[in-house]
Amino acid sequence: MKKLMLVLIVMIVSVGFVFAGDNCKEKKMSEEAMAVKTVIKEAYVKGMYVDRDVEAIKKGFHPDFKMQVLKEDGLSEFPLTKWVEKIKKWKEKEPEVKTEYKHKLAMLDVKGNAAVARLDVFKDGEYAFTDYMSLYKFKDGWKIVNKIYHYNPEIHKEKKKKSA
Image (cartoon, rainbow, N blue to C red; front, side, top):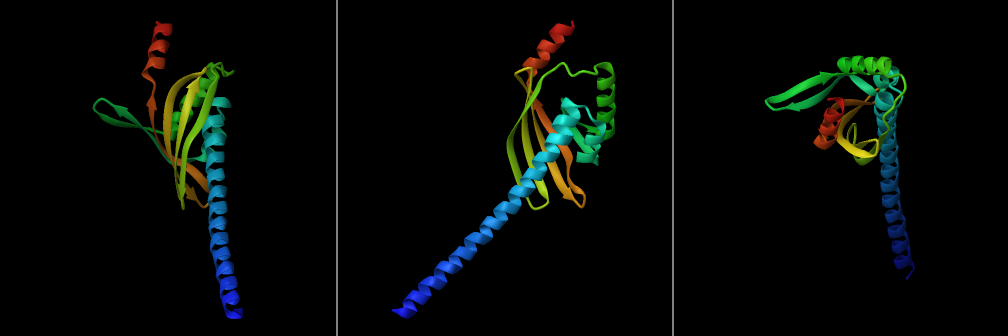
C-alpha cells in the first residue's frame, strides 16, 4: 500500500512539473506576443497614423522593410524610406490628424523569432483595410519586416467622389 501511495505521489508530482513547464512556455510566449503587440501599436498604429512619428516608425520597422502592393500586372514594392517620406509630407500638409483611425488586432501568431499579425483598420468608423504584417525578432527586439494588405474599394470610391 505504501509503495502504491509513493508511486501515485511521484506520478502527481511529475504531471505537475509537466504542466508547470507548459505554463512557463505559455508565459514566455505571451511575453513575446505582448512585445510584438507593442511594436505594432507604437511603430505602426501610433507612428504611422496617430502621431506620425518618424523615430517611432524607424524603431519598430526593419530598415529593409517592404510593403508589397498588388497591381494588375504583378507586384510593386514600397520600401520604408518612401513610406517615411510620405508620412513626413502628410504631417507637413496636415499637422493635426483629422481622420479617426481605429485598429483591431484580429490575429497574432508568434513562433520562436517569427510572428504574423492581422490588423483590421477603420477610418472614421468605416472598415478601410486589413494589414497582414510579418515580424522577426532581432537582437534589438521585434521589427516589422513586411506588409501586404487588402483595402475596401468602397471607401476609396467615396474618397474619389469627394475629391472630384
